[in-house]
Amino acid sequence: MFATRYLTKIKNYFMQPTVNKTPRIEVIDALRGFAVMAILLVHSLEHFIFPVYPTDSPEWLNILDNGTLNVVFSLFAGKSYAIFALLFGFTFYIQCHNQEKKGKDFGYRFLWRLVLLVGFATINAAFFPAGDVLLLFSIVGIVLFLVRKWSDKAILITAIFFLLQPIEWYHYLMSLFDPSYTLPDLGVNAMYQEVAEYTKAGNFWNFIAGNVTLGQKASLFWAIGAGRFLQTAGLFLMGLYIGRKELFVTTDSHLRFWIKTLIVAAICFAPLYSLKELIMQSESDIVKQTVGTAFDMWQKFAFTFVLVASFVILYQKEKFRKAVTNLRFYGKMSLTNYISQSIGLSVFHKARFLHDTTKGIMGAIIYFPFGFYLAPYCGYTVSLIIGIVLFLLQVRFCKWWLSKHKQGPLESVWHKWTWLLAEK
Image 1 (tube, rainbow, N blue to C red):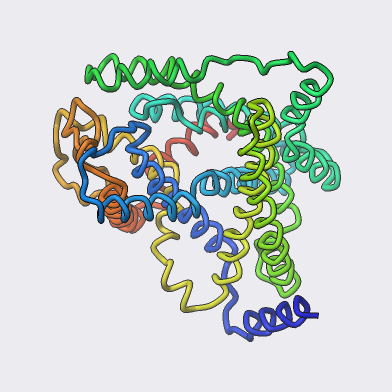
Image 2 (image 1 turned 180 degrees about the vertical axis):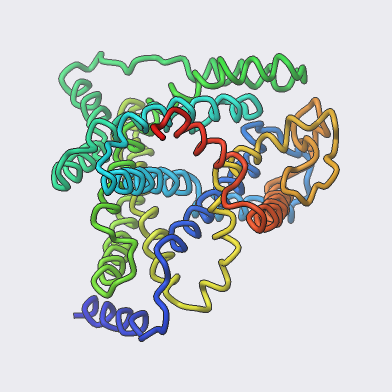
């Protein structure tokens, strides 16, 4: 009864008549902008995968830093990437649908698009220790090509199958039948240790070479062990399914769907999180690395949809739309912003500045040894402030650029190369 009354109150509030309904593209751009902003904040706290921090901070600052870390990671870590992945699948639907209306199959063009994404992933990884998620997207994205002509029901079932983490459960069941069973050693820790060593050494060219080889390998192997491969595939298919059902289109029935999704996801999150924490207290490493991984992915998936549903629902209100309007500009240039986050912190260390730093590319290395090497002086709170400043600089650049162009610079390159060999 309480849930029913609560649902009715929410529905009545958000279904007040509006003069103009929010265009679908605005919601998607703003949500994508939110995801990329959250990724930036998480990466900033991580010093872009360079875990060097102050060792002699006062007690009050340590308390503040711990609070900052807990809040940012609880809200965004593992969820911002998931939103990004969800919208990747949704964008695939838009592209396929547009071509279907012309009587064309976008599938093989999409495969070429994934090859181009490998190039962007390599560029970004060069300045981002321990690999880049775009390479994972490039590989896992093949699943979208394979299922593009499947029915909605088949896509949903396959998405659920991937999200259930069957590989983790296979390993766990094998350990029950064979107590001596061990998980494959992918050598991720050793690879990351080597990455940390050449990063600390401060040689710029060794840093670049190591990142695009060992760093990328470490990232992919970590994704396998952390359940990211299958979760990404599941999120891609969920995004495709949402696109086919047009659930981001503002209608009363779709808004009811997102309200129900918010309630169900919020209810599921608490027990999933508690069970994950309980499992992680097990004395068995294989239980923590299999069942624990599965529950960790599930609780993050639930909270991801709490964030997505909340954003979509709130976006129907004019005050919220105005408050997050900058995210629309940021989301329209998500690829440019995502890649410039790490490049801006690394590649321009020799120049130290560009002729106009307000044009969105940050002008200097911040954390790494061959630049300013501020990592030992930046705790989590200071790093968060730096991330917010970088976000604001990128937003300013986005607004300036989009006032003169239809797409961001890298988005334009990706689009033009996608259709490079298209029939006239």
